[in-house]
Structures are given as structure tokens and as C-alpha cells.
Length: 154
Image (cartoon, rainbow, N blue to C red; front, side, top):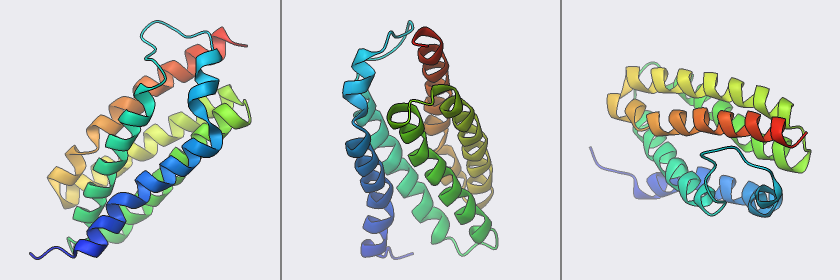
């Protein structure tokens, strides 16, 4: 199958650009430095690196899905956009609005959405589903950080 390179680049770069825009607006790194952090908390510079990789994987997986012409593509697409919206909302809740417990609950909803996305993607294209497992693992780790920071900085 021939790749549509313009679509491929757009689909891959869109989550990276959206995540980057939210990151710039929220200025997470400077806020993160001021928190009392739990054990295992990485330094602030790790987050943009990890998120860039995860957003790239997200875009690659999504391209695999939308070009599959599978009968479940629409359902998978809906789940993809829901989880991406939840993903972009979390830093606003946590950093900008300082609603750390609400952000934690929202993160649990995001984990549920990501799990559903993985299942949905996997049913269409196994590689696309498996590429999202690091994202789920990072979200689980982020939930630990979110809750611990909320409790340590109340």
C-alpha cells in the first residue's frame, strides 16, 4: 500500500503540535519545579521528551488505523479524538487551574479512554494497538505522580 505522505505527516505532527501548544501555554516545567515531589519523580526536562515520543507514536498508530479501511475505523477514530482531548485537558486542570484532585480523576478517565483506544486499535491493526502501550504505562505513572503531588502539596 502506497503512503499518502502529506496525510502521514499531518496525522503524526498534529498531536505533537497540539501537545506542544498546550505545554507552552501551561508552562508545566517551571510549575513542576516548585512542587514537593514523591520518590521516582523524574526531572522536569524528561516530560517534553517523553510526550514528544508518545505523541509521535500516537500519530503513527492513528495513521495505521485511518488507512486500514476497516469497518471499525470510525469507532477507533472517535476514541482517538476523545482520548486526545482528555490528554490536552489534563495539564490545564493540573497546572493552570490548580485542580490537582480533579486532574487526577480526569487522568483516570484518560486511562480508561487510552485502554479502550488500545483495544480498538488492536482489533484493527495489532501494531497500532501495541504502539500505544507505552502511552498507557506513562499515564499510569503520571497518575501516581499526580496523586502524590496533590497530597504532598495541598
